[in-house]
Amino acid sequence: MSDKAVLVTGAAGLVGNVVRQKLEKQGRAVVAIDRVDRSADGQPIIPCDVNDIHRLHAVVTDHDVDAIIHCGAYSGPMVARDNPYSMVQVNIVGTANMLELARVHKMRRMVFCSSTSAYGNTPEGPVPEDVPLYPTTVYGASKAASEQLVWTYFRQFGVDAVALRLSWVYGPGRTTDCMIRTLIEDALARRPTRVPFGADFHRQYIHVDDAAGALLLALDAADLPRRIYTVTGGTYHTLQEIGDIVKTVLPDADIEMQPGADPVDEVHRRFDISAVERDLGYAPSFDLKAGIRSYADWIASRKPNAGAH
Ligand SMILES: O=C(O)[C@H]1O[C@H](OP(=O)(O)OP(=O)(O)OC[C@H]2O[C@@H](n3ccc(=O)[nH]c3=O)[C@H](O)[C@@H]2O)[C@H](O)[C@@H](O)[C@@H]1O
Image (cartoon, rainbow, N blue to C red; front, side, top):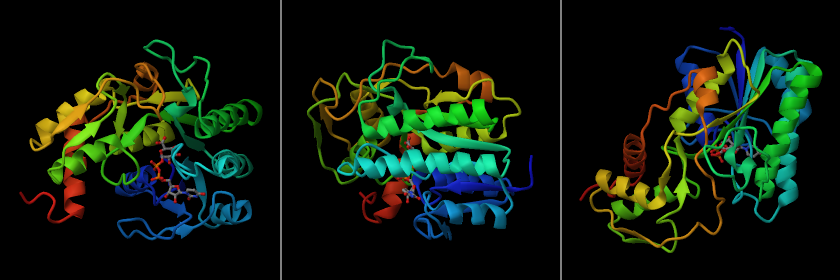
């Protein structure tokens, strides 16, 4: 393992914060950057924009960085919904900047957080990595385009870069739009949840700890037979089934869903994660019940009276 520093972008965010914690726990030097200067749990962060290429070069030189885990981005189609150009700038140019840093500074590896949104609607499962991508949002397109840069920087310049397509990330720290969070918050508040879709609609969640763990495996793998891996929590449940699991954790949950697809989501059949299991030794450590419990505990701890009934 190198004793040089790892640059973590988006270190104030859901995934970046856990990546940083895991690296620090291993005793490794971390250079944490974000557009904000502090994480939600109070950790200091170097404020640096993913598009400020001059400052990025200076940060990398000053801190002797030899690898990057790139989590700093607009993290879903709901972010910057009315500003697609900004999505392109932050997500595609931001990734190009990280690849450029890796190329110019001859880094050991660059790991990119892609997303299963790159697929768009998928064919029947199990869905391997190499099906054609038909993203349905500019966010998904930004991930697909960034993956092409990861691949071509590798092919053309020998930059040791790899992309992990993360499925829906949930767990402690997630404060943005998330069905599991809604179900937990309603249950804690003893509010019924009524959803006009979802009874038969599948969503593949991944716990933030497993997502961060997979990124570290990609950072340190001696050999990378592929440059793109899909990573999920290994489950394939309908939202109703996920609601049933919430109910086993929080018996006050009162959840009813109607059949039909989430109107603002894509239809993803079961993803094949055998490549990341085989090549990186990835194995999800959180099943949904344990993951939902960890998320519920975190949500309850932030709202002191929520769990007290
Ligand atoms: O596939 C996914 O689910 C997403 O997972 C993670 O995103 P996540 O950590 O969940 O998202 P946020 O909690 O929103 O964190 C993103 C961070 O990037 C930072 N950011 C965003 C935009 C920007 O221009 N610069 C910048 O530093 C934000 O301040 C934030 O701290 C990855 O970081 C995303 O690239 C990926 O798209």
